[in-house]
Length: 143
Image 1 (cartoon, one colour):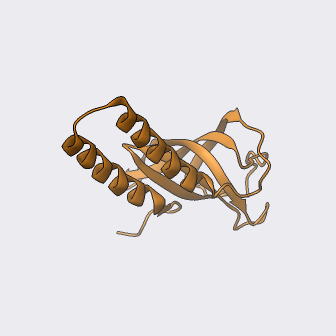
Image 2 (tube, helix red, strand yellow):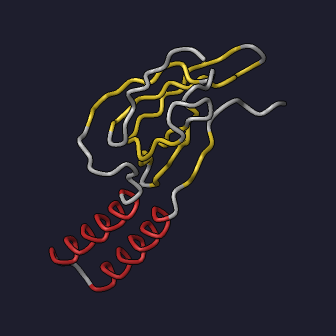
């Protein structure tokens, strides 16, 4: 195992550069920046960390193996002080904020039909964000 940045904590905003295989033997770097929700299995060989990001209104979570050779580098962009070891409650917090924004638009005025349409769209978005898309990262599948 090569040395990695082991000072990775929940609450950190990180930029993970992951190698993606384009063709046989050719790689490109794909960057995924988001909030670290959890870190599991300590510093052992199977250690993982979960990163969450909202892309196009949809919450995306990726689980990265800490010691994967497919991870080029991990940069800590911002460090936040948190009082929990696992930040899974952030998923629900985003849904609550979406509902709060809907309430704010309703107070500002508008027709009843437009309000119902906005409410239906917001409820659908909240349901979609409540169930995040989990993506496993690691070695690419064999072709």
